[in-house]
Length: 201
Image 1 (tube, one colour):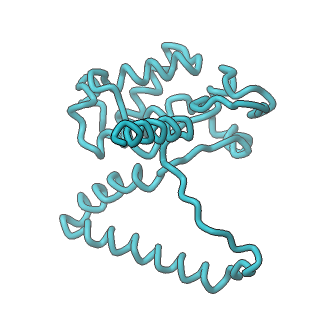
Image 2 (tube, rainbow, N blue to C red):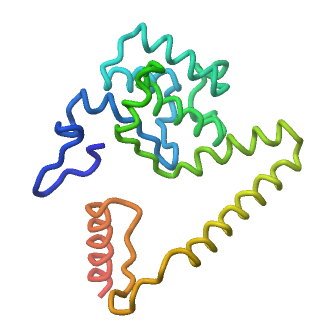
């Protein structure tokens, strides 16, 4: 996604550099946390994404209306994103990630060999799924949804313990925590803290 610039070396996606417009058109990015400019609307972000991916105005209007109606955001399309609930923001994330998906049914198999980037998919699907279950069987559906998710986690954990062999002791290494932010930002924070300590001394 070109968020971090390499200090050396090079990478390619689909035999092209990652910043090429044709490559960007084949990637939909779904972040874990929606972090939108507060004064913009979902329409503003769809227009920006369409311009970045080289999508025409006609395709944007048709595809945007389809996605916003499907995700129950059509009536709120002109409201600033700061007024959206968390679930609405996650649904707006879905619309932005899928706006460049213009495949016909006969192209689905070929597209399955392309790149799919999903980060924090659970936090995006969770609120929408819980809301759908609650609208179906009432407020108690929330507890049913949480219990189902926890049961799935338990089944996956137990199956991994049973089916996947343990790593031999000779390959064990000590744990090294990694920050959620970029390494460049992490280094800046460490430098700032060290300067504060030196100033106190």
